[in-house]
Amino acid sequence: MATEGGGKEMNEIKTQFTTREGLYKLLPHSEYSRPNRVPFNSQGSNPVRVSFVNLNDQSGNGDRLCFNVGRELYFYIYKGVRKAADLSKPIDKRIYKGTQPTCHDFNHLTATAESVSLLVGFSAGQVQLIDPIKKETSKLFNEERLIDKSRVTCVKWVPGSESLFLVAHSSGNMYLYNVEHTCGTAAPHYQLLKQGESFAVHTCKSKSTRNPLLKWTVGEGALNEFAFSPDGKFLACVSQDGFLRVFNFDSVELHGTMKSYFGGLLCVCWSPDGKYIVTGGEDDLVTVWSFVDCRVIARGHGHKSWVSVVAFDPYTTSVEEGDPMEFSGSDEDFQDLLHFGRDRANSTQSRLSKRNSTDSRPVSVTYRFGSVGQDTQLCLWDLTEDILFPHQPLSRARTHTNVMNATSPPAGSNGNSVTTPGNSVPPPLPRSNSLPHSAVSNAGSKSSVMDGAIASGVSKFATLSLHDRKERHHEKDHKRNHSMGHISSKSSDKLNLVTKTKTDPAKTLGTPLCPRMEDVPLLEPLICKKIAHERLTVLIFLEDCIVTACQEGFICTWGRLPNTAGSPGAFL
Image (cartoon, rainbow, N blue to C red; front, side):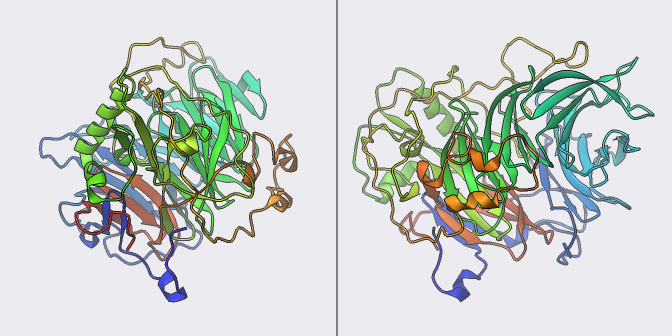
């Protein structure tokens, strides 16, 4: 783990750090918060969340920012790394009584300079549809709390849809709504549509179509977060019972599951190509799960407390090509890794497309993802091919993933190359907590899970193909002294005891659902920095910066600056 020595230095809040691609620097002038800039007393409050949308207006500054702090909700022009934030002029500000906003999501398909649709979930169970530009409140769903009385944990528009949205609650239920339909005046009656292991899906019985269209009951305990795959076809859910469950959204079929090492899972995200899912939770670990193989391929240990957010960085995915060579560590070797923003993203996608062609030159991909936690630390991780395909020897020693030595060699992986149809590359991710809601789509068949209720207009992003790999020599693991005392095989005694699932947590340890620590590679973070006084609740990767937020209500912007001097691998 990349930490600094000395207790005083360990507690120092960092304002910049360096990775292989350049310098990340905190930009104080780009900090957003409540207008008075006073730290929020976060005791008993819901996590601060941030959502972005781009309105594509003619001014060239179409980015908008929404965040909640306590009972308050703010909507600002986001000026990013270019100009100082003006907190005195929020476009919209709302203060709620009796309930607090818990999460929100913009509809990127319908957003214009004159209007934007924003969904807001609340601690008492309601969901509000507002337009912060027109300063209107369109509708309130579950107003009488007849559908669900528990806290809204996650709300997202269905990708590619202008009217469908999905809402998760701490009750463990999810509901599919249509903004065009009303909610009934009495508690809804449900009819079973499909049932499987630890989940059931019901339709709403009524003479006329009403909300909710569908009710999902998933696992035991709170459903903490869900995320749609980049192509919109699959839905990944993480719950307090410690399970990741991945569903085919249209057919309502369970694709695969994974169990945390112990405790609940709190956050989930997809890789930009939809091949991998990363989760974080109460075991202080980040876990990488292969969507194709339905198995855990790596765990990452760097946080000292619960992991609250995980996110992939599509703009810093490294694509290397050329003749086999030894890595010297010189600046020349990094020259094409020092670019940021759209140019870098487009270049990466172009080179990923080459990988799918018949080009004989070796091309390798390194996925970058990040995590933040209640330990106030930001960790960045690289997922390299020596982890993704451990049984294939490496032809080059160039890899930036730190792997902690396990007590025995990795086991339980089949070493098969992952191949996914499609040679086109999805466009850069939008500036949002949500997954892509792009209007770009491929022609495909539309299916529904309820006649007349759901016309799936989901965007179909083609996935990236990661095949035609050349053999590479396996890099020697980095030996780091790190205490793993609280993560051992005896930890099964501490598994989530409050759950009532049919699966005995102690019996899942050592199975494909939950491999033992020594059975999968254990990653170290590239960097692990304390960047806030209070627990971190937001991590969003944008083209030219990283956005983080803490429970005090401060939204921070970290500019990406190319590193032109010194060793690219040196950490500040």
